[in-house]
Length: 162
Image 1 (spheres, helix red, strand yellow):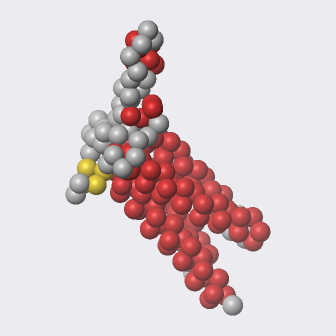
Image 2 (cartoon, rainbow, N blue to C red):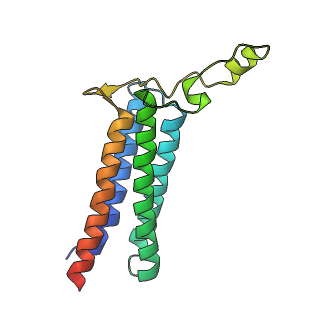
Image 3 (cartoon, rainbow, N blue to C red):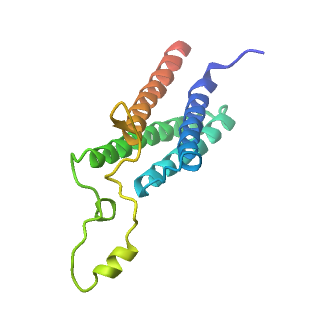
């Protein structure tokens, strides 16, 4: 059985997103690293990548739908990279995040209500780093690489067909 090269980009996208989410859930459930709000939103982008990749694989023979899905997957990988880079910048104090991420408290008559309604886990305080780069930084790097690879594979396969 011959492997059709047009399955490679969405399969790579699908397997990469599954791997990234598996690592995130392993760290959460087995190493007790609790995700912040931005981490959870980044996971949402990866779930969208998985969904788009599955639909792309299933509809591989429908050229127009497949082209739109390839474009959507490219946008999602780029979004994942930008989102993770933004999160990494908040962690490294390059810029400040949303007020819910940095937990800046204004002391007034509603201070207690604000504290109780604010998430206790801050986005600007990484729990885990590898080589002084947080998981958000690694996610940004991996997502940018996958964004580039996906575009390159699509371009190469398109050139090969001409």
